[in-house]
Image 1 (cartoon, one colour):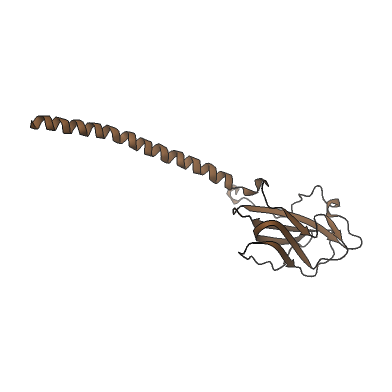
Image 2 (cartoon, rainbow, N blue to C red; image 1 turned 60 degrees about the horizontal axis):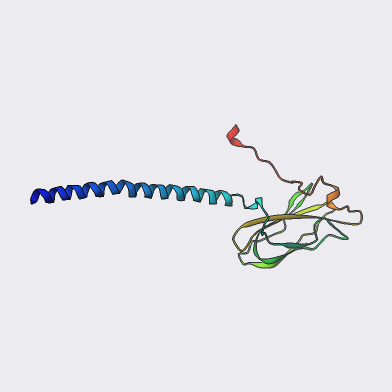
Length: 175
């Protein structure tokens, strides 16, 4: 009787041991698939500015490519839905970035007004903005304006409206 019990116990151990690799294998495979799946999701969110599908609609004052009579005293952005404004910058072609004293506020809103310093005559100005939408996605945009009696629309100075006014920093990995 004792030998039969021992054989049954050994048989039970063999069966349970044969099940362990299967369950471990399933656990490892599910972990592997979840890691692969999450890296795809992270890859999609690494470049949120690649698509403007579903991005909040904005109207600005001054309007894009507008020529106004005199220098504006403020910039206004009006969004269709609530967003959090995280960046607002004013740039001029010769001076570069102009300090406008923009301060981030974590409160969401639809209407933003930023007072401006006295602006000097220039060919055109570029306003860059970035917001976090309701889903927490970063959305960027920009618009151009000019002012004065002899002012031309900003598009007349540029080859396309995507003119970049930025500094390219060297890639130190190549040195």
